[in-house]
Image (cartoon, rainbow, N blue to C red; front, side, top):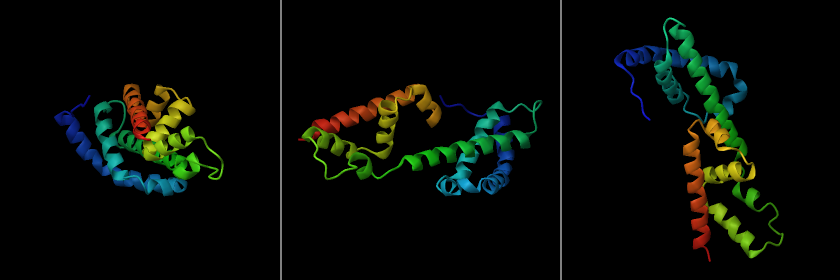
Length: 171
């Protein structure tokens, strides 16, 4: 469900956009080990989204805007960079995953399944691996990806349907 910011929240978010650059600079300076992954993430966009989300929950009587919004930006950056790190760490060329021993003898059904998996996107393969092989729950996957468990359930069903469609189309 999409929510709209009120006029007051919009004004607050626009004023707090000034915290983005210094917070990103501090984040990068303190986390030099995360640089390779942080380079692949649009940090400004993630920070701007964090500011908008924080505008909904900000209570001026409980904390200062600098502290609250800087903290929200920093946490969003950590989540996004760690998600990118996880995606990059899992990415292995398809050939290594699906056929670690290319000279071994495989049945026709195994070869068909490997070829079908090669035709799927990396995201779909990873999602199916997490759900079916690693046996992660929908709640765990939703926390990992930052969305609702029902959304993950739909994505898994779509990936399975895609896999069965690919397998059905193969000779």
